[in-house]
Every structure is written in structure tokens, then in C-alpha cells.
Length: 347
Image (tube, rainbow, N blue to C red):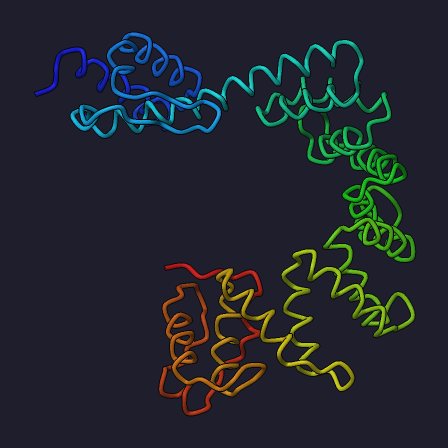
């Protein structure tokens, strides 16, 4: 039987839980934290008799078996309070720290404060701080200010102004701005269409490590539509993009290793498919099953092929190409490339 004080602690913790998760009320992290704090303060003496908290290692040491008598929810939330408290207090302390420096004219801090208000959708304040930071030559703030103009967040939408800000940020070397300027030139967004300029900026962004730009540059070299066709450079940039996490590039690199007459390497192809399959990409799940069935890049293994094709069958998405296990094992196939590379397994 729990005591009255323990019941109070239980229910106050539960109310804090409601505020934390928005159950029957709006999510209010600060209110949740206050309730957790008051609950702890009011029961601190009793609770400290049961366990101690190692703040350095973020671990609890139980002193005796009496803790088992406390409701499981109470112990879980008292433990999580320390972690939760750190998150909230760090956010508060960070804001105070950066705001103080922002007021003194530090452009990096001004950019941080701008982001803080942007996340809270206080776009007027975000623009105010982005503008100050941009005037201090902060290229990230200049880019973010361009985003506000581009989407009309807290200010009138103005494509030309957005492009000017993106260009200024790009000239400072910011890779995301370089990519966006390439997009603007290619599509004539806020500036006259110029495919040569588009490629120039995509290439600059690619050299800065921007994955999408690396993939686009690879495509341009492979297609030869806007620049001279160069398969070697196409492969180079596609591989860069794949390593950088671009999903399209990863699939295309795998296909290159299967189809190439020069650099054919089915084992590398399988490794890329297997990586993507383990990230629940449905197309890759099917292709891994096919590799096991046909011995492409891996030893033939019908048991593994069956496991993977069953996983494919379990995936649920609209318009999925259908195939039965028997048909698959007998050599029938679907057009795996009709499945978007981004389609993920859902159950």
C-alpha cells in the first residue's frame, strides 16, 4: 500500500507526463519541467533515501530494495527528469549566452538567435537577427534570409531578392547556397535561365561536398547534354555522391558495377544494394533477393533469397509490382526500377 505522499508524487508526475506529451492539453515542456521539479522538491527527502544519482555518469545507484515499492512510472520519470532538465536548462542557458553575445554584435550568435526564432516560427524576429548577422558577413545568415524571401516567411515573397541573397552567400562559399544558385540558374528562378552558369555553381557546390550537386554533376557528365560527355568524371562524381549518402547515386553506382564493361564489380554492387536494403529501401530489398537467387555478387543462396523476397512481399505501398514466391524462385522478375528509390518498407 502506498502512502499518501507517494500518491501525490505519482499523480504530479503523471500530470507532468501529460504536459510533456500533449495529452489532453497543448505540449508545454516548460510546464512539464516545473511540475516534475516541484514533485521532486516536495519528495526529495523520501526519495533520496532510496537511491543516489551520479550526475557525472548519468546513472542511478539503488541503495536498497525499498525502491521496488515505488511505482515504476515514478522511478522512470524521476530518472528521466535529470536528462530532461539538462535539455531544457541547456536550451535556456544557450539562448541567454548567445543573446548576450548577439546584442554585442557577434554575427555567429546573431545567426543562432535567428535560428531560434525561425524554429519557433517567429519569422519577424528571425529576419531581424538574420539581417544583423548577414550585415556582419555571416554567409549562413545571408542564405537563411534568402530562404525567408523565397517562401515569404515574415516578409513579402520576392524571388529576385531571394536570388541576390543566395548568390551573396554562394560567393562566400556556402555549399547549400551554391547548390540553390545552380538551381535558380537552371530553372530561371529569380534570374534569367543560364544552364552554363547552373553547371558552374553545381560543380562548385559538388567540390564543397554537397551530395545532391555531386549527383547532378555526375548526370551532366554522363548525359553530355550541357557539357562534354565524360564517363570517367561521371563515375567519379556519382561515386562521391553515393559515399555522401545520395540514394539515387547509390543505386546508380550499383548498376554501374553490374553493367560496366570496364569496371564491372558485382560484389561491390551487391554491397550497395545490401546497404540500401538494410535501410528499408523496397527496390533494394527486391534486388538483394534477386542477387541471392541468381548469385550476383554473392554466393547463390535460395534460403536467403526466400527471406528477402518475403520481406518484399510484406512491404505495403500503393502500386507495388506483385510477384509470388514460387514465380520468383522459378526465375520470374518484376521491373524493380519502376519502384522509386526512396520508397521505404512499411508494415
